Image (tube, rainbow, N blue to C red; front, side):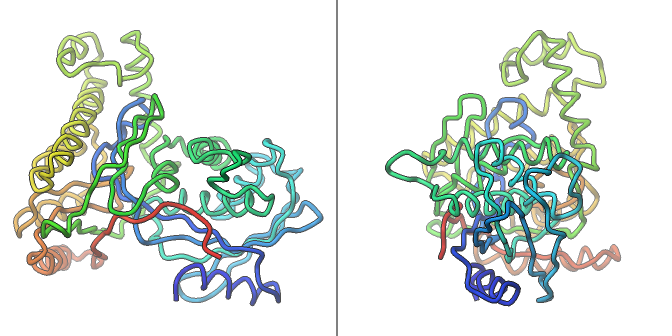
Length: 393
């Protein structure tokens, strides 16, 4: 059963009638470009086929209700909240993400109540942007209930870039996670068979062809099943440190440090900030180099850039974990052309660029390596660049 149908069926079981509509948004994998988004840099994500769907109907009383269908088939219902009374901190736990959407949209004149039921298959805590998928799906649902469907030819509806910034406010101000724009932008703006080359500073976006199957390659996602939370991890510390470094250099953001100016810039900074700056500057260049190779049709040649990205995140940004490092190392040893952790770090997932015949070998080798360490078995799947958020029913 596709996720939209599951959400609609769950909605009817909760509310006794079919929803007005169903909207969904995907998780994402970031091919390369990690922790560059909040430094005004470049990112290169693609959307996953895994989606979260929000089935919704309007209410007349400005009350917002939300339920979610778990992977075990059980429904979890949050306490109803009055939209006029929403404020940061008023809702906690998983329900803070959809409630935060209602809070942000209230600021833009969308104050109608709604019943929402969510279903989906984006793995949580895996670094695959499940929270952004949830927020984007609910954003489209509440906008749709207000008669503001995406890509309205009459121009009455906020565009996808604007909605991404609204969703970022949910994370930053309501949930309390200092995330950048990568996850929301990917969920809303990616297209099938492409990676999204996104310049965070300018807002310019370019769809870059990424058909790995056509050249006999696959992107294998290795979910280590080590959970992480940006709001409770070192993510915020890294962000504050890179912003401090930019300030000490007299720059708006580390995006403004050119690669050939990296060494003199590092000389002007305290020792503890230098590795973080080195990662951001070199990672931006790796994104640009990857895009150039993809435009030339040289997908197999991006492997060394993926490898270098992981080393940089492991050694300079210090956001990897033993599980991620082992997954990357074993994948490389058993046939991957390149591999790296993806997402915010401190757990989550790695990706590997693997020739199609070697996918099973890599999966088996990583699973056996985890078993030898006494760790939970990793979850693996082949990621296919998929469509961004939209209305399903």
